[in-house]
Length: 157
Image (cartoon, rainbow, N blue to C red; front, top):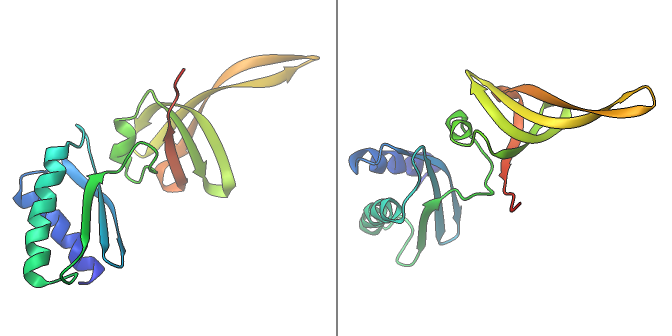
């Protein structure tokens, strides 16, 4: 089965099963293991993953897409997974984020806003004022297209 076919099949399943709040983040195929990672604006439940998994299994079994023996894992993208779509940023406003963006720059702070295709990250830094350091709050604006990688950081404080 071609990669494009799998992509289309997953999206078809989400539509047919009326799981329109879910969207595909990525999938990985390693020999006989297929991993599918989903996200949602409202959250990914076990039951929704199970529903899509059973739908896909029926098709894979019928077509013998991966032979007689394979492992299919349908789950949420997970907390530490990189953000890939603009809509993922919207649901994470207020959380700590680390972003690598064009030119090899890196910023870590609170995801404070998302407007159009601009991500706003707020953080504290120190600047030298005479002989003393002064703490200032900066909000950096990063264009979505300039982001190389970004991850939500979990804080247990």
